[in-house]
Image (cartoon, rainbow, N blue to C red):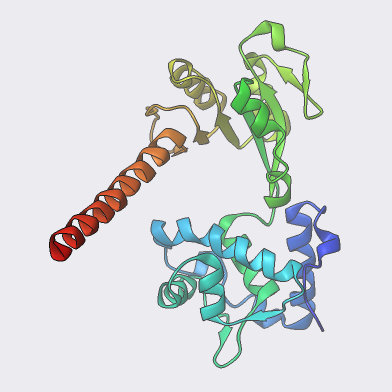
Length: 262
């Protein structure tokens, strides 16, 4: 049996695609699918969790190209890590590789998806309908990776009812009903820094326990609330640091060459 997420399946919701793979594996080798339930394994290090999405991205790309098996070296190259680190990371999930053969692409993609909680779709709300909020609302990558945008929110009453990417903008006071009726699980903050903490407080008060913050500020949250920060300016500053070091090194090499030649 060939198990592969073919390119014609790309438009399926991620959870549906992974569900198809799981069904095939249960029918083919039930003991293999059930041998490493997450509850039966030790905790996975945060650094490993941070790399799992890269492995999943690489596996998805391989599957869409019709590749059904991959070696650890090939997968590591596709994910941009060392093969030894990849093997160590995957050892936390269970033993899914075969010596001399490598990993079956769809099976490993399913196991990583299960570990990341992507075997179901997660309802997401985006707060702040400025330029960044508009771009996030129109981003198709959410739906293809297990995240379903159920609401767009803004405090500006003049935006309420306006449709962005087919979804009407709602006022912030609908948060409570979104949690109870839609199962809202993740809030994405795309507001200016000055508004971010207040929006965060509203999300937490409504019962949201996972927040992705694009605002350039540090959010204060109670215990039990997870926050991930995406700061584009910080990433650019880090790149600027490396560019400066490369420029200084190049200038140093030129100075040395000038001294030697002189």
